[in-house]
Structures are given as structure tokens and as C-alpha cells.
Length: 125
Image (cartoon, rainbow, N blue to C red; front, top):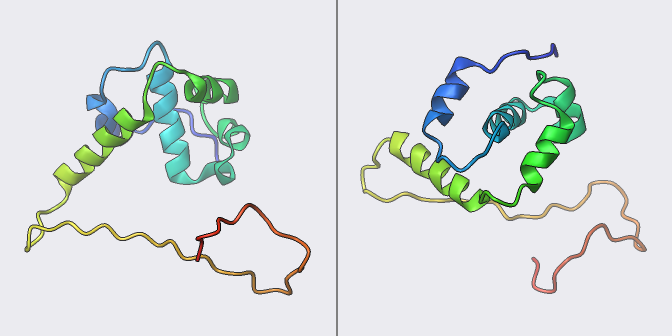
């Protein structure tokens, strides 16, 4: 994949109405971060994603953005969901269904009986 040097126009139009909660260049870093995640660059690892972006898409900028304590992820998600719901067509029965898949599939290969990856809760299915 080639290196991306500029933000596409549709990305800047989508995030034009984002709430004014970011300081300095964090908004630009967020736009690059969202674009590189949407494209699926670098197996979603910050170090690999920063290599495919522009000057503003550096690993230290992403880490600084994610660790900044003045903005709230909840506000961004609420705004993003609100914008998405506005663009969706109205359902016939005026009900929006949210479907999630919480299934857990076991490995297909031979399982090691002495190893457990991660912590499994007691009530997990």
C-alpha cells in the first residue's frame, strides 16, 4: 500500500461538524487516526499505521491524542452515532434494531489443556 499524503475531502466534510473539544492539532490527528483505522492499515497497530500516513500521522501524535485527558470518548461516540442515525432511512415500523454477536468460537486445532488465553468470566457462555 502506498503512503497517503493528504486527507481525502469526504473525511474532512464528515468531521466538519465535530464538537469543538479538541485543542491544537489533535483534531487533525483524530481525522488521520479514524481514516487509517477505516482503511485497515498496518493491522490496526499505531506504529504500523503511522508509517502509512502523512507528517501529521506520527506514532507519538496518536499516543498523545489518545492519552490526552481533556476530551471525552463518550462525547465523540454520541456525536458520531447521532450523525449516523440522522443519515439512515426511517424504518417502516419506526423501530431501530441493534444486533450484536457475542458468540465465542473455540479454536479448530488441537487444544492445549494446560493453557488458557485471557481471563474467562464465570458467567461466560
